[in-house]
Length: 64
Image (tube, rainbow, N blue to C red; front, side, top):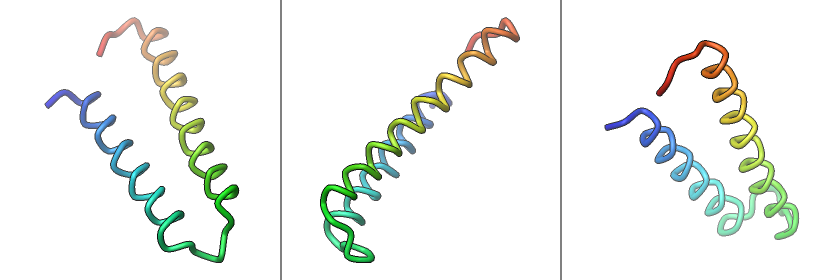
């Protein structure tokens, strides 16, 4: 399997587990709004991570 595909699969699984954990089990009595912001933050952090990885690859001149 392609490393990029594995990375996307792991990202999706962690995101689904995070959503289930926050919405179904409700840790620390978080409100739905707070849970949505946490999930949105998770997605934003992943996008920033991918952006940094892509910039580093461009600097090195390599391809995936």
